[in-house]
Length: 383
Image 1 (cartoon, rainbow, N blue to C red):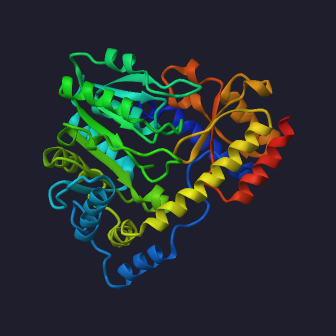
Image 2: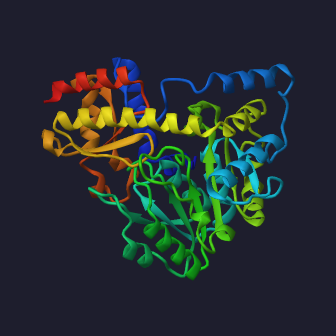
């Protein structure tokens, strides 16, 4: 019997599952997967409970409940000056992962080429395969993980139809700067390409601005912007995401979304709408707390002998393991629970160019400071 699941499931999915199971089996601290170990604001939880108690438990509108669509549009205006029609230019999805899938499946035809920043979030590979597309990686390389603009331009061919962008970037933590975004915009405009911009870590940058590519000249009309409430409010399990952009692109996205999850989290949507209206103090304190956890982890890893690449954003820090005498990230991460009862993720699973990621390991710092401190104490066994 022919199956496609093995073809589509990548090494990343396998390693993530293996590492999570290993963490549970060995009592290891899981610094591999990017989810917080504390819940988001109690008021948001209470808003979801109120929605359930008031009977909002049946199918919501397929494009999302009105108050969330209005809140998303208001958020884009407030933070980025983007004017969005909540009725035609917003669709609510089951997390950003579904939004990415719906965008790719709705806009990429078999044989179309999609430029992707490598290393990349593992769902990108799977969904481009599902669409029958061809990925064209442009690799961000250590130690600075900046965009190689000449390689970006060289990646374009007559078959290229889209750029799948991710900034702030998982797993490297790079936040693309204006020069890099201008180069991407030039390529998109010159070659009439759609940009699908994954911005789920938009509120998690440390001392550098997040600039949505849709704000650049000529880019609003060709950009689908994707985000979610999971990362900004620490409710990753709720899976409330969204896409915004020109009506034609949003329609293509919604045309697929309705046959994936159909609708998304009826009672959770008004709660995320409330969260999007939080004042600036929430966002600044949230970032300050995460930056403290980043610094705690990065300083600790550096003191243990790792070569640390301090991220500008996201939940993740990257290290080179070679100073500790290790060469292969997969081998290191498989051995780590036995050596120190800590779990991390090897970069190889995020690359086509495996050699570029072989000595690199990703660590999540979206954990309580005492958990990070305990993990560092355990890791001291390596030195």
